[in-house]
Image (cartoon, rainbow, N blue to C red; front, top):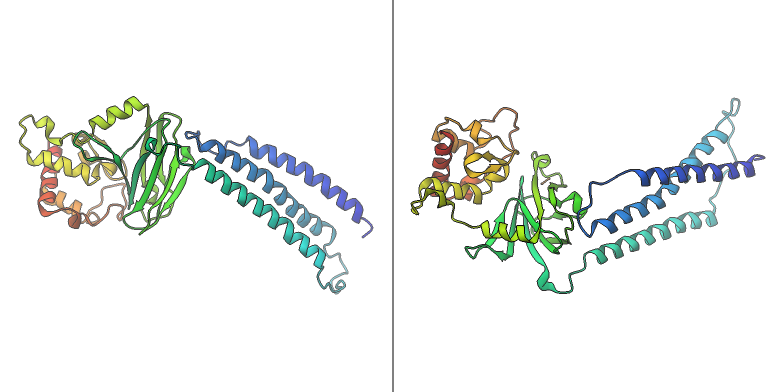
Length: 349
Ligand code: CUA
């Protein structure tokens, strides 16, 4: 190899230039949505460090392959020739095993330290809010065990309300298969594992409306398994808490619980509002059909069938298999009757 030394010098120069271009380019790319938690900054820095370390490794491997193809390829007339047999090179193998191992161990330790640091419990545990996240095909449900509404019950919501600047610990569980609880703007995510409670902490530091996204393929409705996070000021949060748990029958005026008012409560408690728009219940879900439209003028039998056997008739533009099929066992016969009557009543206006 007369050209050996020249080649190595050339490879080093090309590699350094390509790595520099790659790193600058990668750092200029806006990889993530807006950052809205105190955890997001260190995570984004961690990402940048991983890019800075891995781009030169990628460039090194690519350059060696390209040079090998260019300078060591078979020339015409060499078809029958074979080089000297090689019996390994211990020193080389130790080096190319040790360097990547040290690199990876270093990055693992660094990433671990960052995670431990950003998930530290607040100094005063009393300042932390707990939220139980319940995942099921294909909806999210949030309960606030330590946050009681005016009726004295823990608040439950299909939209995740959080006060800005306050540490919150999520306990994540699933009723059925694997899901994954992720708010991209918070940068933290964790699997919802059947039979287990998983958790993470965030401190939202920006007010705004973000999406909860399911990040684990969980069935046909996976892509639609979304909910909203509303990060609001502490005052707005308290006002929201005070609004919760008010009896659904309020507007009836009479105080006596009518079947329709009852049905409205069931509609919300069962989580129908998470996926369906229904103006009477003030819900705006879009995962399933708009009930004001698809149930207008339909009979009680049709409404009942749509609840207990959702795939029997599918509204235009929707796929079968999206809606859970266990509502008949989840609801008592009386609750189901009340829900059907309520839906017939409010969609026939
Ligand atoms: Cu739940 Cu994907």
